[in-house]
Length: 214
Image 1 (tube, one colour):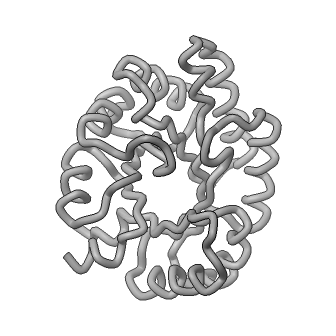
Image 2 (tube, one colour; image 1 turned 90 degrees about the vertical axis):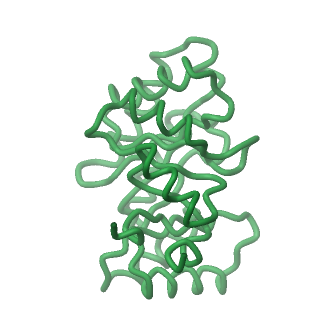
């Protein structure tokens, strides 16, 4: 198992400064992680710094609450791709899902998928800690219907992160061909292995270096 290629090496802290990004970039180059996952303001810097590597640049859309309008999420996505993003992780409108406004949620996701365009990986953050099992299943089905590449457990900024149960349920719902990203609270090699065993194909973590070192 090439564990490094499961990892989106993540820094989304509000108070991250340029030196923090330089460190993340250097670590991503050294360990050849799958991607760096950074806030939109850092996409251009990372894309330039990593252009001679196969490390992807990932960013977040409608983050962290998912309550931006669909038009805003689509614009954020187009802007991120123009700045060099290879992957975008968008947050669903959780309240709309809970209200049963499924067409809204599906269309919200699809607008991001369409704005990203071909060749860009789209991940849908469902914030599983706020959802019932039935709602997790519904969110995953909507993401699949909208043409997203991945479903993702969490922002890491809500009441909880990834759980083995949520990852298992997400994998069961989307089937074998769609990606599942476990994010939030994955801090150790044991955590990462448990998520992968449950069906995760990507791990979002700020602890990538310690995980691959074991």
